[in-house]
Length: 234
Image (tube, rainbow, N blue to C red):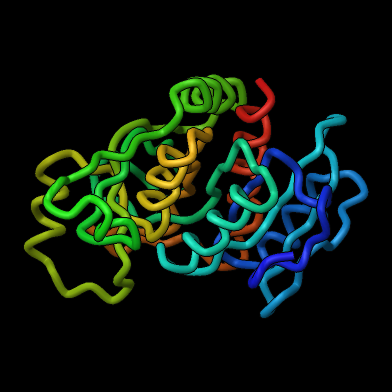
C-alpha cells in the first residue's frame, strides 16, 4: 500500500492503462478485462486488475491534471513496478483536419509547466512517447480502420485557459490537440526508464463549435482502449 493506492503487493499489473476519470476506469475494466477485481478505491480513485487475452492489465484512474497524475504514476512505478503506462483520455482538437472522434497518438507533449519543471530549471526538456508503443498503436488504429493522427500535443494544467495567444501559436506550429496529463507521464517514464504513450480521443474542437455528445462518448472512447491494449501487447 502507498499513500494513495491501497492495492496489495502483486495486485497491480506491469501494464497499466490510465484514464483520468475513475468511473471510466471502471467502465473500461468491466468492458474489456476478464474477471476485473477492484484493487484500489482510496479517495474514490478506482483501480481494477484483470486480464486481456491472457495478459494481466490494470486500469487505474489518474485524476485531472498533471499534479494528480504524477502522484499515481510515481507510486505505480516505484512501489508496484509498473513497466508500461498508457494514458487513455479525451482531448480538444487544435487543427482543422483533426476531427471529433478521431484518435491522436501523442509523439511528443509540450507544456508550460508540470510537477517536474523545478527539476529541469532552465532546461526545456522535450518528453516523448515510447516509439515501440507509438508504432504498435498506429498499426492497431489502421487495423481498426479509424482516423488517426500522430504528432505533438499540448498538456495544459489549466482547463479554463484564457491564453488565446498561446492557442494561436500552438495551432501555428502544428500542435494536434490539447489535454492535461501526457507531458508529465512522458517525463516520469523517461526518469524511470519505462514505456509510455498517450492515446487520445478528440471529444471537442477548439477552433469551431463541435463536440462529442455525452451519450456517444463511451462508444467512441472504447476504440482508444482497444488500441492501447493491442499496442501494449503487440
